[in-house]
Length: 479
Image (cartoon, rainbow, N blue to C red; front, side, top):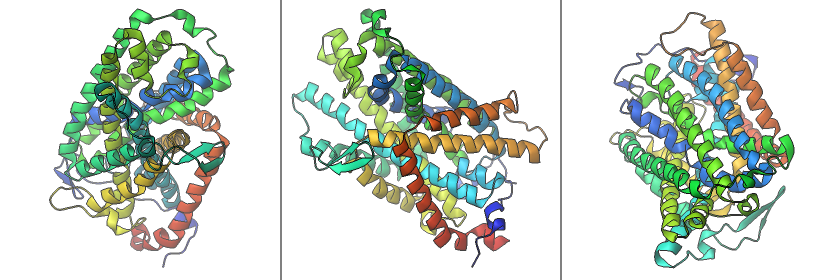
C-alpha cells in the first residue's frame, strides 16, 4: 500500500510519447473533426450564460452587466490561449486534470480533477433546471397548457447559507428527463452525439442572431441609466457568475483523444469558439438591456422569450425564442455530461477512481458505465435543487481549472523550453500570469456560501483519495 508522503504529492506522469495523428490512442477512436469540435465548444458555452444569467446578474450589476461579460470573456480569452498551447503539448484526455498531473503532481491533479467533476456535473444539472422554464413557456404558447408546478419546481429553496424544504413542487421532472435523454444519446457514441450537437448549435446561433435583429426596433438608450447602480463590486460579482458560461472551452480539451489532428485542431477550436461565443453574448446582452428596463429582469423566467414577445407583440416570437432555448440547453447538457465522463475516465485510468469509469464499451466506443453513473449522480441535483444555488459552484470549478492550466503552461515552458510546432501563447509569461490574476479576482468575487460548499467538496475528494486513490494509483505502482 502506497503511503501518503511528499513524494506522493509531487510525483508526476511522464509526458506523452504517442503519435498525435494516429487512429487510436488508448481505446478511443479519433472521429471528431475541427468543425464538430468548434460546434462542441460553442454548443456547450453558448446558451448557458445568455439564456439564464441575465436574470441572475442584471439585478446585481445593472446595465453594466455588459462589462461583466467583457471581463469574463477577457479572463476566458487569456485562459483559452494557455489551454491552446498546453493541449497542443499534451493532447490526451483529462483536460486540466491531466495537465496538472504531468506538471504539478498527483495531489494537485486530484484537486483539479475534483473541481472539473464538480464543474461539469453541476453545470449539467443547473442548465437542465433552467430548461424547464423555457419548455413550459413553449408548451403554454403552443398548446395553452402548463406543466404542473409539482412536476416542474424543485422542493428545496436556497436562502443565503440555508437550504430548506418549501418549494412549490416535488421534483423538476423535465430537468431529470433531459439529463437521461442526453445520457442515452451519449451512449450511442461520440460521432453520433457530436453530429446532433452540431445541428442544434447552428440552430440556436441563428435564433440568437434573429433575437438581436428583432429587438433593434425597441432599443431605448434610457434603459442604460444608471449604468452601474451597484458600483464595481456589482460588476465583479456578476462577472464571477457569468464566467460559468465559458465551461464549453474545457469540453474541447476533454475530447482530446477523440479529435483528428489534435495538436492543430484543439487550439484552433478553442480560439474560434471563444470569438463566436463572446461576440454573441455581448450582442444579446446589449439588445436585451436596450429592449427592457432593468427592474423587469428580477426573477424573470424564460427571459429572452418574454423580451421578444414584448417587442413584437406576438406569441410566435416568444415561441421561436423558447425553441432556441430548449435546443440550446439540450446541447449544453449533452456536452456537460460528456465532459464529466471524460474526466472520470482519465482519473480512473490512472487508478485514482474505480476502474468502472475507464471501461470502454466494445460496440459504441464510449465509457458506458461512467456515463450512466454520471447521469445517476446528476439526477438528484437537477430534480431537487434550484439553479441559482448551483451557478457559483460551476464558476468556482471552472476558475480553479483555468488557473491550474496557466500554472501548468509555465511549468511546461520551464521544463521543456524548446518551441513546439503547434500553437504558442503570445506575450509569455505575461499572458499566463494575467490569467491567474484574473481568475483570482473572480474567485474573490464569489459568495461565502460558494466557498463553504466548495471546501466541503474538496474535503470529500481528499478523503476519497486517502481511502482509495493513494492505494490504487497506477503511478505509485510504477514507482
